[in-house]
Image 1 (cartoon, rainbow, N blue to C red):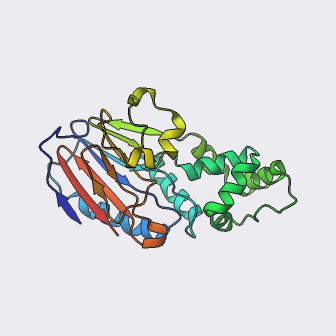
Image 2 (image 1 turned 90 degrees about the vertical axis):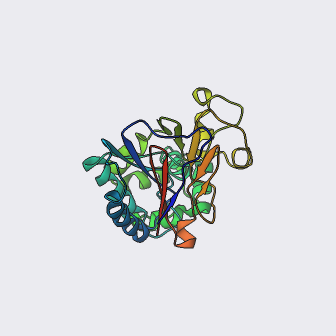
Length: 247
């Protein structure tokens, strides 16, 4: 757990009185999620002043790759129902939703990118080579809890607070925040991460793996590759303060 000094330029901050705990890509690692949430609870009382509002924000890609996507989804859904928690749509959740709609290309892409682990966690057999995409979509729908599907379909692609803009992947440089393409927000990569342009707000994102949380003038990268590295990271934002919590 470390505390970074506030920056003199722009001095980004959330809305006055709000503290935001931002959690990067979980990717099916319920063990790390459980550990990190305990650290977040312990951290809460160490940072003063106490906020009027606390937001727990998941940046998407909660599912796939790791072994416990179902447990991760159930845990986060409980937090959404009982606390001020939010989850944004990631590209992996988007692949699952497209698979539910019978998109064969999306189903194949999902299987290549960690979807098999998610199916296993829900006890669903993977698509057969000769299986029609809509038949697999029916099996998928039958195997997923209706509550999980409804929740995934309700996810927003962004959250904004003060000087910060939160998305799964990033924004397209040179395009105003208000005019961003929805798909870019959960799928863009190098064009965003290689840019030093100011985007109008500091963009807090996951999606592109970094060795440790990176705090830059125009963005904060939170995806520390939990499914492979064992490090799941959280960034706490309040006033000018930026605090990093990791497993």
